[in-house]
Amino acid sequence: MRIQADIDAGQDRVVDTFEAVELELALDMQDLTESDFETCVRAAAAVVGGELLFDIPADGSVEDASRIAAVRIEGEDRDVIVFAVLNADGDNIRVSGRDEIGDRFHGFARAFVGVLTRIRDDLPFGHTSPEGTA
Image (cartoon, rainbow, N blue to C red; front, side, top):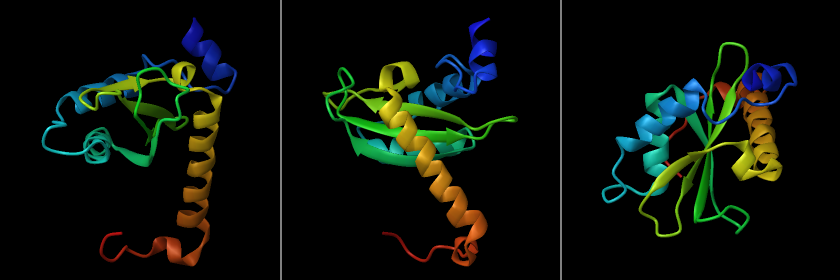
């Protein structure tokens, strides 16, 4: 079974995980004509109990992509990183896994989680509530 082999090897599971399917369904409820990509992904992540890590322009390494967002969804044993990709026309969002996105973006997302965890758990200002918006 490939999913179990990926888990045993310490890798993220394939894109057809429960978390990825949940995020995809939540993204289907979003309307790109009313909100921008980041807002849609952030709202969908909140629906599934996840959080938006980052939203960056695609660099050409992913086919038919203009933006890529990473979403962390907490799992029982391990967090799952799922990627939302905005197509080149800007009118459709798809969920992609590590295979399509590549190790560079996945590694960046994992490192980002490490930084967030350190800020939230270890540093005194990580426990304060944000004021306003950036």
